[in-house]
Image (cartoon, rainbow, N blue to C red; front, side, top):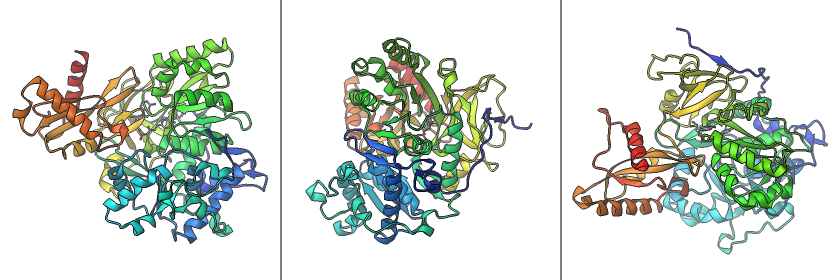
Length: 580
Ligand code: 4UU
């Protein structure tokens, strides 16, 4: 039977074959950058008000690009690693690397030395760009990898503080970091030459390497190409609410190292001529204060932020009337929660300036957005991930194993498969995982189960992959399991996600088998062991991977005949345990 292929209701877009850099920064003349006035702000540091204009960003990027080539001898195709919380220096580094034809791999800024070492080695990065606070972890990482201090320090570039961009000092604040190269130092080597600026034929080359565990296993480098990014910008523009240069501004709280923040805060607003007010992390009071101070009209969020906005007193203490769009993604958005926040914000405005809570869906592997809700459907379709974006095709597949794929009947659930120009090139150095994820005719298997209604709106109803999402962050169970297995008393383990309605997120929960069952005979012994494991993991992994969903001592991990963990069984068990 021929597959049932769904197309997008939006008109097909003309896509380009330029590099990301020229797509964003090409100018007609000195008065514009990327089609918008050169002197308008591109990024604003929320804490200090420091602003980088569009033309400054372009100039800094060209200078940094040249510094990377001349001072660090990096060449087209080489990779740099960025390891920092959000800051104004982020776009300078990312676009500077892009201008020089380099790739960037983006690391979670909360990673510990073990986690960072994995990504540094796996990506083949040559240099690590780190915020001042993160340099000690980088030094530890490089030391663990066997480098002496002098060698290690040659691979570190300190991400100059945000005040530098307002003419402040470029000097390093922490004395122990003196002598390290900084981003400011790298700007001193002149600008890229004209012929180098917009290097051609980059379209199908990799530009970003974010890490995702996909449907199974440990994190893998996702090869996102220039074409993936330029395409996603064009197709999102069609479905995303009209943002107007000169009127709109975005508050940037999502981390830039995750594909959601990387594309929808660092690229999309710039591409639309909209400034982004950059926050290093989400904080309820600062969030509200910044909406008032910068007259923010739009912010991109994850569902747990709505939980905070539904309760926190700061919502009543600041004027949030300019805010007209909250766009949620990266995890399921509950209709009731969205309604609650809309009502609360609307009450204060006495019905004026409606606020819309929208939802989008995507994955690291799809660069990321594939679906979003248009503004006019915000209330009517609350809880839905919206419509398929143009230039993409979708299938809902019932049996994804082998050749026996069947497409779900209308209105029935199936695994979303996506085909189109925004699908990653593949997983870095991992042809097996790539082959498992993308069929020979180009369908990428998301691992998410959805239903499509008669109007073409999709709703996520389940996830068939093992991935856990904590507040939008990926927590790969396989990674936690491999760490847990290094615990001397853990003989076997399985990690699953359990839902927390209160926090609008999943929480990682571990089942562990004691190496010596005699030691966990009584209930008290079990609880003591579980608690010690829960504490122990906190010294081993970044915060978002902590076992907040609990640790349970179990006699044996349920497995299939082939030795595969029966996660569904554990999820059912957890439901009972948590209900009881
Ligand atoms: C239910 O989380 C992301 C990307 C999120 C994103 C980006 C741009 C959302 C909207 C947007 O415009 O990427 P990853 O790779 O970290 O995680 C992907 C997984 C999906 O497979 C799905 O299980 O995150 C889950 N997910 C969602 N689940 C993402 N968005 C949603 C959603 N509802 N809206």
